[in-house]
Length: 403
Ligand code: KG4
Ligand code: ZN
Picture 1 (spheres, helix red, strand yellow):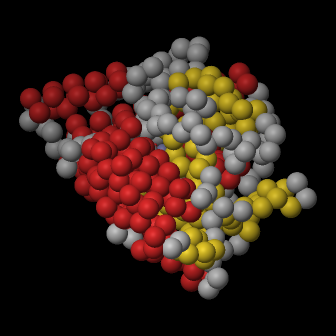
Picture 2: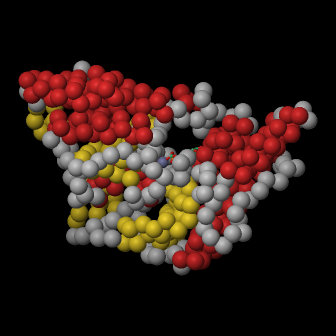
Picture 3: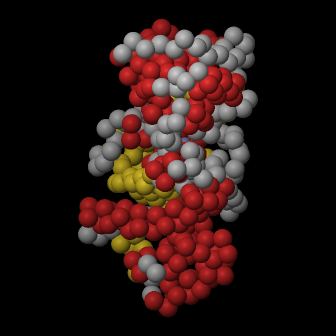
């Protein structure tokens, strides 16, 4: 089965083509292609993701990205087209889309209407699209695109939870970029996941469900800001561009090399609370006060920034390590999945390895090409969830996994 994955929940427009099969009860996948168009540079001017700009960019990027991904598929084999839609039928569909979608998605509609290549029905069996959580106008763009393609090509649409995508993204093989068949990494049970992204910070307990799927229970979550959000806000206060995570991480590495430490001690929020919840807004406020004081004292300079970035990353790291360790102890987890954009952080990856050694368990982090938002993880979850109904697809601007 070949699945087209569509991801537009935030500031990455991403499409993928993934082939999957089941052989003797073992699930296997093969990546045909996975493309990501990042809008980070555009949003950088606003210090964060600007939802209507994200929507506009998705509308602009989706059709050209689809053309690229289908060209890659046909390059692989000359016979990757199933059938051709007649001019007449195509025009009828476009008329129908005009009445349904031009109110909210005029640019996307125009791009689809002007793309004759869409008359070629590709060898795709299903369309998986991120349903949520995410930015609502951005999500809807992907969903409307999926609906149009589904009507044109007569394919089912499977809605996918973005956070579940991050869970499975960490089970993809490091070598799974293109071409060969791979198996998902085996997850020892009981297992938990630590999901750390721009919109979420959650610890989830995972149970096996039939058909290689999981059931989830949230056992800890942030009470205010997400960890990626804290990184982005702290970076903005330090006059660093969006996205702030990689920027702060770079400064921290420099500070360590130059043995620069901050005189200011930032809080480690909720580090001693018995539950598995997080709170990062106080940390961000502490950075704000530290920056204000340094400006007042005329020492808002590079050394100050390096020191504070390092102290900030120490605070985040110690908090995540403490909570993850408690979660492992409380649940008896034999394996941990770490997912979400923040998991790309080198320092945190090092800490996770130390935890894995301490408890003698496996911690699965995503390889670099799937740590941020991507459509490969969406296609994968879509392929696994194929049996779910696609009739009630709606955008979910919620903050929960599994809704
Ligand atoms: O999962 P993701 O790509 O998008 C969401 O679903 O939110 O996560 C984006 C977040 C941003 O807040 C970004 O600053 C953070 O991941 N991030 C990092 C690093 N790379 C990305 N945070 C810390 N260190 C990094 N190396
Ligand atoms: Zn994400």
